[in-house]
Image (cartoon, rainbow, N blue to C red):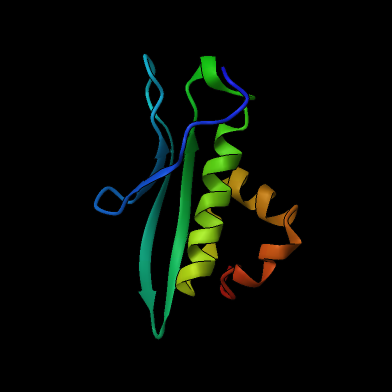
Length: 102
């Protein structure tokens, strides 16, 4: 795989961020966008990377894209997926996005 990872795309209808992988299932982050009062929350539900593509930074790139999107849109994040929760804990610059109810 080249040094540069493929771009992350978002499919709002399917509620997922993904990276297209030739010859494999897409790497993806499934989420649920929920309005809670005046706040919009992205509940980051599950990450998936095909076995042969793991440990290459794909999931990290997808999740960080979701964090940036939430920040740009003024959303909060609920890291229901253990991987997203662990990454959020390692990224102090995104702590302010954590849903207060989490």
